[in-house]
Length: 447
Image (cartoon, rainbow, N blue to C red; front, side, top):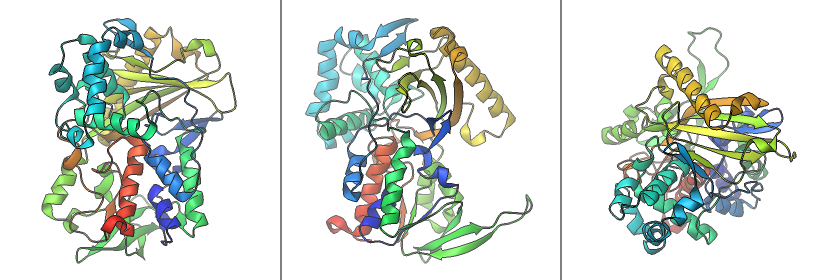
């Protein structure tokens, strides 16, 4: 959607194909509705890194209002007790400044990228033995867009790049996120307007069967037509020709539409290596109409859940148009090696593991917050991949470029490419900006 809007306003003829219905536009930034509340396809908080703002500036639109009014000065449950994050940091303020703030401000982006394959744990332990500072870095590993099932295994390069980018974009160190009024799906609305106002077309319920590649050039796509009449029927397709094809399919699903037979073996292997190294999220969201049930001053980080034994985070958001209603989202991270695994979710053992972990996660919440789930007006549970994990060895040049290697006219802007230096919507925006410049030939780069 970002890239289509950018190209449309530059006079390119754009066709967007969405496999699902209109409600799916925006992908994992789409939102559904429960009792009038926007419930997002995952967690709500977005990193304010300037890239989505730049896209909206270029297309002449205004980003939806930021309704996040809390700061990152929340609470942490560590060592079976609650700790105030500000107090924890102030207790080690000199060490925190030296290890965290000085690193962010003194290192260049190039020097930071030299830390891509260094874990945050190794980085901080090489510089201090202060447990408060070490715990702070583990908190950052859970809270930032590169959230980890193992918080201390977060790439130091990814962590500091995200922080420094937010410092450059906003003139201050990150203290809160961007929560779009009306849910993250509201971001798609102005993008759709920009596409259609500039002659672009959007087709929903138009799943792509495959990208057609001939003589190492993308020629277009085969799109499924009609609805199968039996479970074994092979669907018909129609060919749509295009000089440039852009896949926004996430890297973990890329081989559903891109044949490895059309790729150089080394490049196909690179994609194979990455496409299942996902961070998977279980997200529990509860709606409430009693403001006293939750501390709204900041996020909550649980280092080790009392029932699940896992790290997780939580934060609240007021509901649009109602000062008394709000929702609280809890998100728990798992690695690709864990059960349940999203890609094996139809197997009985993974279904059972999902139910068991969801129950344990709910047990954590109720134990730490006095039976909170029983007081909710509604509940929403989701499970799916959040991103490719930002561990050492899986960031920077390990990732693929937006321009597909060896195939003219093919671009990959799904999760994640090396151009996405931060996570989520703002990382997708970075990728879209890079792809747009390539396609438009900006800066001497031609297709």
